[in-house]
Length: 306
Ligand SMILES: [Zn+2]
Image (cartoon, rainbow, N blue to C red):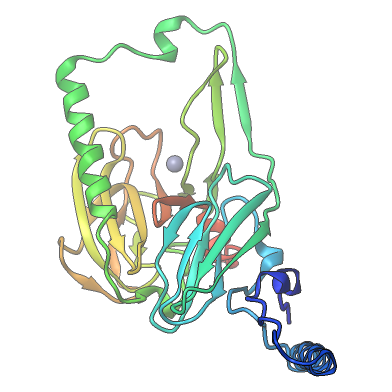
């Protein structure tokens, strides 16, 4: 029920009927006005947007959110200047990053070339920022041997490549659920500032459970990557849910699937561990859409009671 009237002026102006007698021009103007008024009335009555792009739950737009919008088949849409995949039925997902600004520009270009720009208001969140000062400088940026740096670079590149795979099926249409239930021990967006230097924010959600607890596929997907011993994240699995949406599972102990496997929602993909740089058994679950890291807790909704 949110037609975008503000963009009415962007509509191609029907040309004034030149060369006609004055009264004919006036008549044309009257019928044009009547037509516009009728269109407006119909749009108000039936909620039909005059333009296609409609954000389905604009009130849910906040940093870290993943929200549906409806466009038209064949349309091209950009969010903050970046092209996003549009499903064959015209649906699309809008991913808002941790640092998304208060207004994000959406540009829709229809198959007929008609284009409109919308501004989406994004609620700004307060993230948990922990400042620690007076640390010895070696603790802030520990020096790394070239060999270790090369290994980290290779692992990062492999994860990036796995995430970049574009599978044109919305495997996430079955909905996204928590891969396991448990106490949340770390949240999305939190960040440490050491001696005034901001470290990379935490983009996952940590769920503390004993080692060996089953981890289930939150939605249908294809296993794109398994690292048994990633330097940072230990046992790591990337599940491709289609159309640029993927889940990552970090610090896992064991895997019950292989790269290339198709897994249905709820299937046990492996178990909780404390591998890599981890201080205790937990699952770190991350969701990325089209290269934007979103908050799994917003995507999966409130953790069900256990
Ligand atoms: Zn974590």
